[in-house]
Length: 193
Image 1 (tube, rainbow, N blue to C red):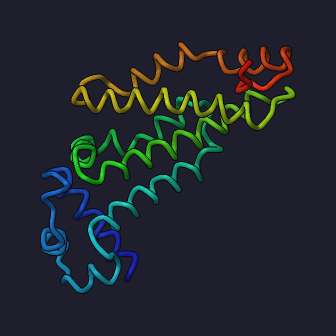
Image 2: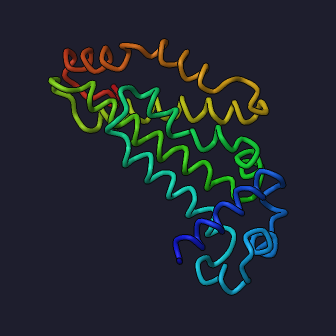
């Protein structure tokens, strides 16, 4: 019964978040929508911020757990942002709220994990340091997440799947090339002379 109640709270919250800004949502809105009392809500969550945080943490875990079944970083990135695509208005409401950092952390965490796994796969058979893998992964993570923030700033007008497909075509082979080039140089990418 408890998982059923938690799911009802989460669903009600997401439905409301798709209708009005995060900063305007109250516990009363949520409990009225899902037909529970306030004490039941507080049994599961300290406040609305904890609820939002758990939603992003669960989405992050789901994406990370499923990474092995993706055939490319694009597929993984699309899966990682699927929740955002399906709930554009809710995401926009969080993005423009005082809890924006929860959304930012979600995007960085799932993208970094996805990109790190992809870079490690591309480094197979090469003598590449963990520092170089991290540097390359971080570079592509920041590029992709920065693009998502630009998409949000532009009122989500562009089709995100189309953007990811274009980015994939631009990145095609670049990560492996960078790794191979670094192996020939035999010094870490982050070394400054």
